[in-house]
Image (cartoon, rainbow, N blue to C red; front, side, top):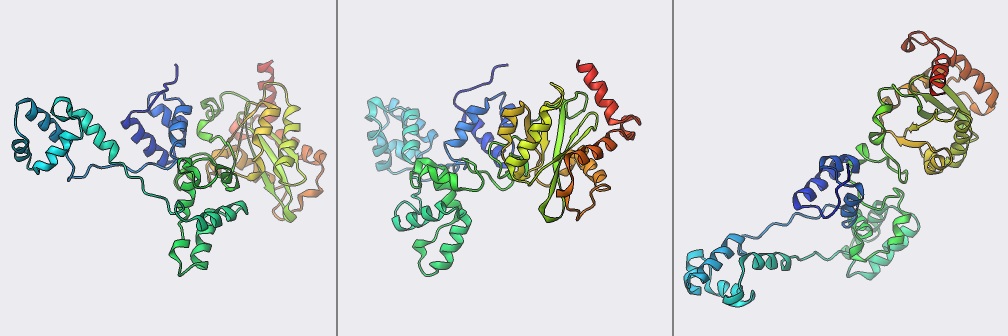
Length: 385
């Protein structure tokens, strides 16, 4: 089914912003809007920097669309300006100016007049940075030194307690960065933000949307449905188990068979972890690895390099949701029998880790009907061949 593109209706736009604020992914929003393409939704969000534009309301002091229709009907009937004004309870000068600014009696059209009034009534509030070059320069300098907008706002409030003109909220800084139509802070400064995002996300979205702090991360909510029911092999879960002196071991578990792979890593730097995982994955039979689900650890910040090297898509769990990697969490618990908390893990060779994994893989598991993970995986490989 082709994805719908094109301009959003006003109702679709309201629903888009409401669901975005709730933390839904673009895929979820697109499905709710009848198959809207993610690219068109992102374009709509990016135009406003991910910040929902304020809902405009018509002032009761201004003429309504219905009143303009009455003016149009009155002129067609040949009524005078004073007569029309009396019927509407308005000043004759109000009606006279309304007719004059919209082409006079011969050209007045209610719908066109109402649209023109609505457009001209927009009065964007000037940003606090717009008329204060000194403040704008200080904010830009601090951003270049990797200060967060919240740190900048707090520091300004403390350093300039008696100078309100040199104070600004962190939200205003974010909006000045993300809403580039303002043209107040250079777009390049966005790269200094720790989040790595190009548009604003609300607090609630960090619990449900894309993982925070990992660029271009894909949420577990977008993982193929076939990975959930374990009916199809090739979907893996991964994590690091920690030891003393900042030492770690990477663990991989195949969801269908519960087959375990342990990977020695020198440290938890993302390139170190990704390279070690890549070497292990490439040793497996072709077609046995389709996806990898990880938590929000920064050790997988270079997940795109992993995907390019292995053709395996990485999905990330929600924050504080270990149950979304249930097989991996269970396995990590079993591994504590071999690697108790507080153990220095740097002393284990890859051969020793392989021996521990072999013990787990040849141990009958109740969840597999007392078959072993190794036997279950061998069956999977045979079916694949």
